[in-house]
Image (cartoon, rainbow, N blue to C red; front, side, top):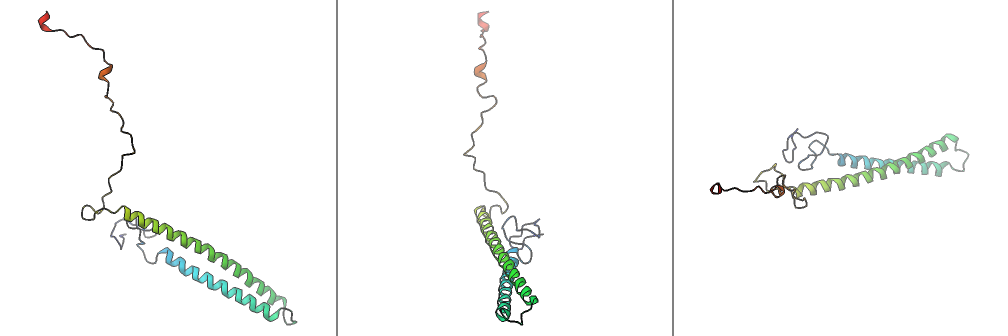
Length: 154
């Protein structure tokens, strides 16, 4: 699959682009998570409201049967679960946004002049590495000097 944003080849449909960091498929996960986040908030509010209404209507009256109190208790449990789910999803959305922002910044840092080579890597900074000595460096100093003979001396 090709990325719709930068045109990079061999992209996975279920992952962000390795070159530009954009989502190549349909709706990106952070948008789907926002929809789920909204539904969790609405469900939590509706469950809490229904529990309040049931307790306010039937609490302390003879008309309240055990089934009404059980339904109100279940609504409280649902409201607590949806509230927890809302805050969990909210933290995931924030973490995903931080990761996406960091990936976009890293992609911008790695951009080279597109006219030179769009797929080229930057040259490596090897200044922190120690240059290893050559295998033959200094080996001639270890040899014993050979006596020189002149052909004239013979």
